Amino acid sequence: MSKFILSAFADEIDANLETQMDVLDQHGIKFIEMRGVDGKNLVHYTLDEVRGIKSRIDARGFKLSAVGSPIGKIGINDDFELHLELFKHTLEIAKIMDCQYIRMFSFFIPKGEEPETYRDEVIDRWRQFVKVAQGSGVILLHENEKGIYGDTPERCQDLLESLNSNDVKGIFDFANFVQCDVKNYPDGYELLKGHIEYVHIKDAVYNGHRVVPAGDGDGCVEEILKELHSGGYEGFLSLEPHLGKFTGFAELEPHSPGYHLPEGGARSFAIAVQALKKILNKIEN
Image 1 (spheres, one colour):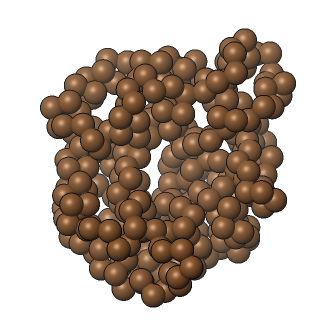
Image 2 (tube, rainbow, N blue to C red; image 1 turned 180 degrees about the vertical axis):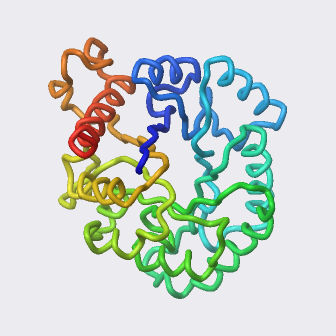
């Protein structure tokens, strides 16, 4: 039996954590993939400050689905030692936040160069991450971001299978693959379905690579969620709308939270939630 749990990058609603939680409450979402808190990335807070953030979300009944970290989102030729220290700090943050997952990346490849040239270095760096995290109970989630080593299903598969660790799993991000001109379904999904632990909900179109609400693009969101549902997926669907410049507010239904709001993060988020819930209603009913 599958179970989809909704979460969100709440910093796309507003920088302020209290406002983030206010809006999520309106939509019945009680999990946050925490990235930005009061205008600063969570990983750049001290551990004492993180404990204070934990107290604030506890008081409102929220939990983290993942730490939305920038780990691995540097150039493959950038200094790694300092970045590894930031990862160690991030791991401690995940423990304080009682969070099982850290979202991570596999390093930007220099423009014009073949990603395969840097394969061994990418895998070596990730093995160092895995070694540090071993025994912590925290799972490292690799996101398929455009421009990094693992930006195609084939290279995601290569990384995950080369590491061959229960502490490393995959995020399936529909829009990021579309923006790399990848065919999500059935190609990408079939290649990675055994590695999918977590899902990012945003969609995009091939023509111009513009981000759109789930189901309005070329990401095959409904098809893949249907496959996950029938396959018994139990885990998070994390909304990452990226709709800051989206103008389709007329599509909001009158009963939807956000209908009476002015254009902005909260209203864009309402559109994203509505689009996802329409898909889930078709799948689950």
